[in-house]
Length: 212
Image (cartoon, rainbow, N blue to C red; front, side, top):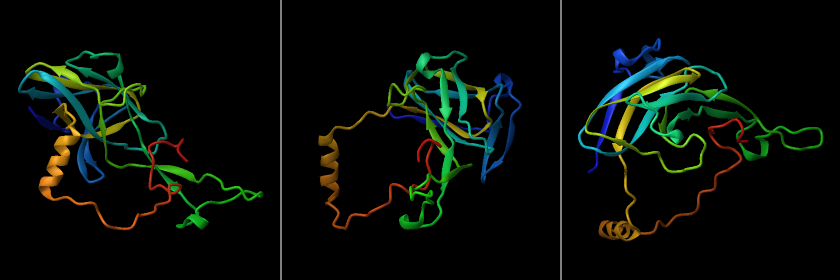
C-alpha cells in the first residue's frame, strides 16, 4: 500500500555519522549542513518489505558553481551502479539587462544578442534518487526489508544542507480511463480562457549554467 515517512535532516544517526556536520537555520529552515567529505546517515522504520524511492530536501550553502555530489548507500551498501552517485544541482538565475524581451539582452557591435551573466542562489529544492548518468528518466527504486533501514550520504564534492529525507512507496501510474472517470465525477470541464504567453528566453531560473 501507499507509505511515506520523513526524517528531519537534523535527526541524523550520530553513531553512523562521521562527517563534521552542523545543525543550523538555512534560509529559514532547520537543517543539517554536511561538508564535502565524510558520511551522514539517517534511520527509518519500514513497515513492510517492498519497493521504495528516496527524496532529499536540500539547499546549497555557498556560492560555488559546482554541482553537489554524494555517494548513496542503503544499509551501508551501494544498491546498484545507477544509484552509486547523486548530483544535486544548484539554482541559477539570470542577470537580464531589462525586464522586457525588447531590452533584456545586451548586444555586441554587430547587434547580436549576448547571453546574460548568471549567478547561483541558495534555494530549497527537492531531489528524488535518479540515474546519475540520465540513462533512465524514472526515479530509482530500492527494495527494502521490513524493519530498520539506514540511508547515508558520503561527501564527494561541495557542502550541502539537508532539511529532510523521505522514504515513500513507489507510485503506480493510473490509467487514463480511471483518471477520466474521476474528472467526470468531479464535473471538471475544459477551461475557457485565453492562452498565457511567457517568454521562454527569460526564465526565472535554471538548474545549469549551460542553459542560456
